[in-house]
Image 1: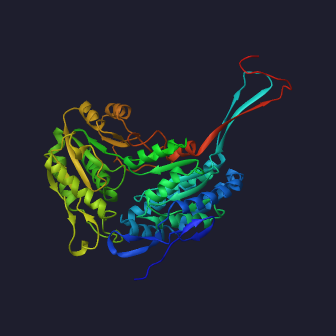
Image 2: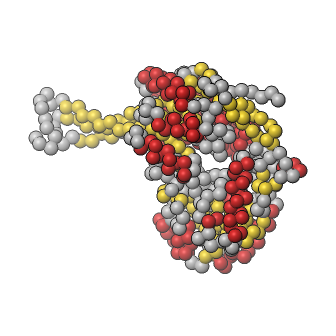
Image 3: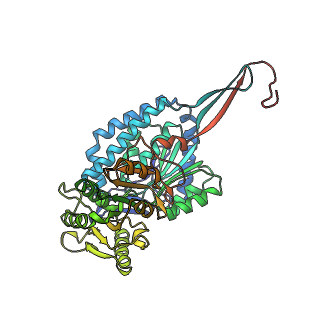
Length: 493
């Protein structure tokens, strides 16, 4: 079997891992299809990449931000030309359907345009000094070398959320792509290089989280870490980085609720629930994994939702008629199956789905049926723990206040949605729901790049992607210019 072999990018050169080992990138729709072999790197490779990034930082930080922005504008243009090619590559390595991978590439395009505009808006403040003939201001400055650890479910969009703000701010980067989907990150970085990015400004080191991710987090030459992944791993990242006084941005799990009130537009709520629960095969941190139904409409909603779920077409995402692709790998498949068993043992009822598809056209892939469970209570594990698969729980409630309480009763706080025609309830929910993102009459998925993205509780540590990313990738410097030509002592004179 022949397949392409890819290398790390270090200091502008494509180099194999020092170990010589590789990891195969498999198509989850057909695991006999090998996309390529990617480096299985270790700490020694990280050392080389960090050193290259440190060397490049000396010059990159001095490039005016509007000039750095020109590279991002060209990147956006080149991505738009290659959108279909990159979307097909992504569907092949990640599994989600083409309409979604096109959206993933489009998100990188949007992020490039948005962040490029910030090249002329890296704003600080000027403020009056308390002393005469003295000028006071604050400016943003880059951090230095930053480490970026990205997940497999949005293999171009999420790297763009991290790379582009870091670059516009004047940092240099070492990125570790997910081992399941490295090709999309390679495509993104190659596009940056084609747009004029100098050697060493962005470096790619492929490999496992335990080898490459841990080495990045603990490397003394890395000034900050931006991580997207599970809450369990994020906790470890934060603890290890804290030993080196290293700032960390964490974007982690979710157990997102869609609340449907008895006055809701049920057709709209059904559309939102179907898209939120089974888009990306449920493999989004913002996926709708809980649907909270007011009892008056629960029976009708449930019947119609199950009917539509059963009609979803499952298959290879390269087929334009397919609506739900495979899960990313066998481990995720096992997780979905395990949680269905746990839910049934705790008293939930299976309405449809609940099993892996292993025969016929599905035999070579990692497919799991879209699954709906009802008679779920808020204390069950299926209602509290993240599955990251096409498994959704239906939970009934009596009052609006009870719905808010159930939605907030979990450890996560990323995204939530409310379907209602009552404007008073809508604004009360916006105020009271414990989440970083709130939707009214829209599903729990669909964030846009120019708003802050992230959550509360076990979902994040206070930092944000989107328009909050520049706050993480820069640090403040206070500047005082005294033109009095004499010693002036603040708080004394």
